[in-house]
Image 1 (tube, rainbow, N blue to C red):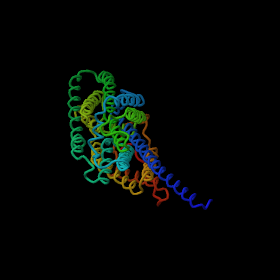
Image 2 (cartoon, rainbow, N blue to C red; image 1 turned 180 degrees about the vertical axis):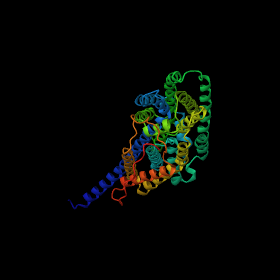
Image 3 (tube, rainbow, N blue to C red; image 1 turned 180 degrees about the horizontal axis):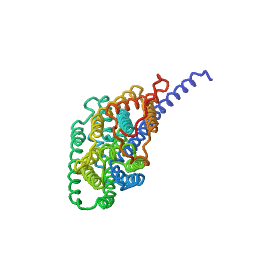
Image 4 (cartoon, rainbow, N blue to C red; image 1 turned 30 degrees about the horizontal axis):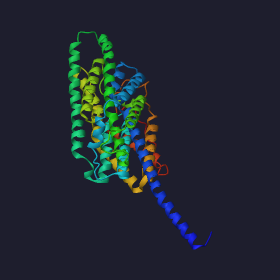
Length: 442
């Protein structure tokens, strides 16, 4: 190399220019990588939302034989896809009414959104493993709230929006749905009490096809919108759009496809609990429950309320059991669902907060990648555990076993799932005993 001082100075200047030019390029690449991972994670949540909530629309139709299992989930998937394009009012609520955008942007906001999504996904998959129809909406909101709280403090959450758009609907939805379904079931049975039971079943099964389809369409107008709102948050944080822009069409289309694919897979474990675990459903009951659910979900979508379709559907099914003379309601199963509902927000919030802490501790795209890897390992571990006692279209309608596990048994199964997750995420860690298989019913 030349020792000429002029050449050396020129070479040093060239290095400075190269570093100056490369730094912003590398920063842009890192930001794009983070945004891409956030969008992928959001679509993954939408996918889990689809298979977790299929039972909300189709469990009763499958249980009564109105629709064959695979036909039911295929029909629900198509109608979820269509419903996702009908309205974006709920998406706007998620984007602007839950997490406070003021004072945070860029990678900081992307990390919050990402951590919240991870919290929602893990709770969805975990409750699916246990066959519990918990709220995907509350799992998502809980994850976002937990991440925002630890990152920004109490100012990071729009508390008025949380109370008005999450907590109050959560309290009112199952009660209202249950009352409407109970009254509807009682009225239907009074009207057809002189009609032979076989004729009732045959006629109302056709009615169920229409009412279940309406629930699926309503589900698309509500639940698919929540992921749209989250992706919109990420795009605002990245600077691709502003908070006042319309949601891009590609976001709407991607979310619609993701929830439809998840719905088509069918969350058979949850479908079984809703269809066979709460009450023994007849076709008139099923039609009353589905009609009640569809009416309430469509109303909430038109008002921009991100209602939990799980709460509505479960309340409607319970109400149909109460409204049918002589029907048996399994209140023990309902009680376990209620416990899952109560802990969904705080549990997913804790996971969201922990994920944000880990991602922030490591920092940058590396932190996001590490948390993403843990998410994949945990979901795979829970899916593998579910294969020990699979629920599928062939056994989803088997008779509900008497003496289903107590809440303590459900907690034991929860701990077994946690040890599986820990083993997958930390394969070099201390060995743990093989957990017991999850029973076919919860």
